[in-house]
Image (cartoon, rainbow, N blue to C red; front, side):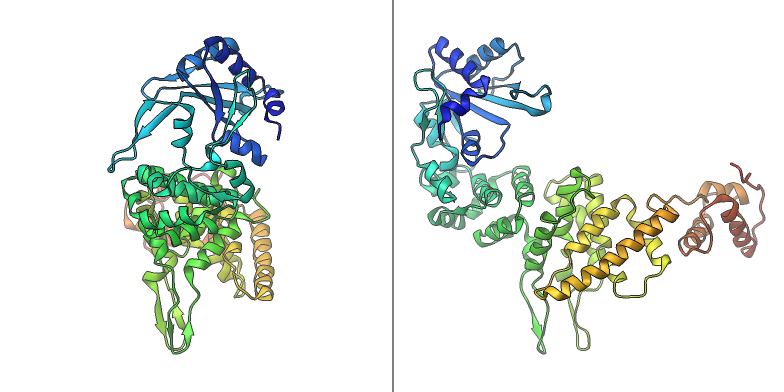
Amino acid sequence: MNFSDILHKNPIFETIAQQADSMGVKAYVIGGFVRDLVLGRPSKDIDVVCIGSGIALAEAVGQALRTPVAVFPNFGTAMLRTNQPGSPTTTDSWEVEFVGARKESYRSDSRKPIVEDGTLEDDQNRRDFTINAMGISLSQTDFGTLLDPFDGLKDLKRKTIRTPLDPALTFSDDPLRMMRAIRFASQLNFDIEPDTFDAIVRMNERISIVSQERITDELNKIILSSTPSYGFKLLYHAGLLERIFPELIALKGVETVEGKGHKDNFYHTLQVLDNIANRSKKDAVAPENELWLRWAALLHDIAKPATKRFDQKAGWTFHGHEDLGARWVPRIFRNLKLPLNEHMRFVQTLVRLHLRPIALTKEQITDSALRRLLFDAGNDLDGLMALCRADITSKNYEKVQKHLRNFDKVEQKLHDLEERDKLRNFQPVITGELIMETFGLPPSKEVGELKTVVREAVLDGLVPNTLDQALPFLLEEGRKRGLVAKTIVNNEQ
C-alpha cells in the first residue's frame, strides 16, 4: 500500500508536513486513522503526534488553513476541523487532534497516567493494541513512510487483537483496554490473541477502577457492532460480563425438571440482539433509536429468572416477566449511567409490550385487541414490531417462517386499522377537564372512572372518537351514576 499517494489526496497532511518542517519538528499520523486506512474503513478522526509541542503545531496548521483551533492546555492537546476534499459541508469534516509524543506511567489504583514528554517509540509503546500503534511519517523527507514496530500490519491481515507490550502490564495500567479489546474484536470481527485474552481473564477484577460512564460507552459500541453477540460472548468468557452486567448473566443456563427444560435465555437474548442488528427493514425505526432498540432486545427477557416457575402441566413458565422487566429498566439504566429520558421510556415500553403482538398471532385477532396495542405502543409501534420479529427464534426454520407469516398478517391488520382509525397518536376527545365542566365535578376518582369508561368504549369500537358521538355516551354514563349535566359542550368546539 502506497501511503504517500493516499495522503497526498488530502491536503491537510501536506499542510501539516509543511508546518512541521518549518518548525523543525517531526510529525506523524498515528492510531485509528492508520488502522482504518489499511482496512478501507471510513474515518473522520485524525490523530497527529509530533516530537515537540502538539499545541504549537496545531496553531501553525490552523493559521495556514485559516481555521480556528481549540486548545486544551491541561491535556497538552489541540484540535481543529477541516473539510474533506470535494465536500462543501462541515458534516463531512475531519477532526484533527494534535499532541506531543509522550510516555506514561500509572499508579495501581488509577487509570489516569502520569505523563512526560517522550519519543515516538515511547508514544507507540503506550498504545493499547498493535493495530493502533502504527504511524505514518508526515515529514517531507520521508512522507508516507509506515512506522510499525509491533507488526500491526500483520495483525490486521491476521485479524488479530494483540497488545504491543506485555498484556498484563497493558491492562493493569489501563483496565478499560480490556473492554476496548473486546469492542474492537466485535466491531472488526477479529480474534483476540490467546495471551492477550488470557490476561483479560486473569485481570478482569481491575475493571472495578474504571468509571461506569467509560464502561458503558464501550458497551454501547459493542451493542452497535454488526454481530454484537460475539462481543457479549467474549465479555462472558473473559469474566467481565458478570462484573459489569450481572443481570444478563442471570439469564444463562437451562434447568430441567421431569424431563422438561426451557431454552437458555442468555443465548436466546443474544440471538434476538443479532436479529435486530441484521434485520432487513431498518428504515422503519428512526436512526436515533437504533441503539435503544438494541437495548430493548438485550432487556426484553431480563426478568425471566425472577419469574421462572415449574408447572407440572404447562412446564416452565415466566408469567409477568414483561411487566417486571419494564419496572427494572429504570434501575438498570441508572446503574449503567444510561440516560433516564425518552430513550429509557422507549426501552421500557418495548420490554413491557413485547409479548402483545406475538400473542395476537396465536388467537383470533379482534379490532379491539389491535386498537389497544396501537394505543399502548403509540409512536413506538415500529420499534416494537421490529423487536417482536427478532424475538421469533428457533432451530426449526419452518417453525420460524410460519410464525413470521402469521406476524405479517398482524402487521397488515395493524396497518389497515391505523389508516382507518388513526390510533397511533390516539388522544380521547373526552378529557378529564371536559368531564368536570360537563357535570360540575371537582378533580376526583369519579372523573377518572368516567374517562376510563369512555376510553375503553372507543378502544372496543363501541363509540367513535368524535365529540358528537362520544359526548352522548358520556352523558348516558353520567346518568347511570346519578350525575346531571350542568353544561353541554358545543359539539362544534
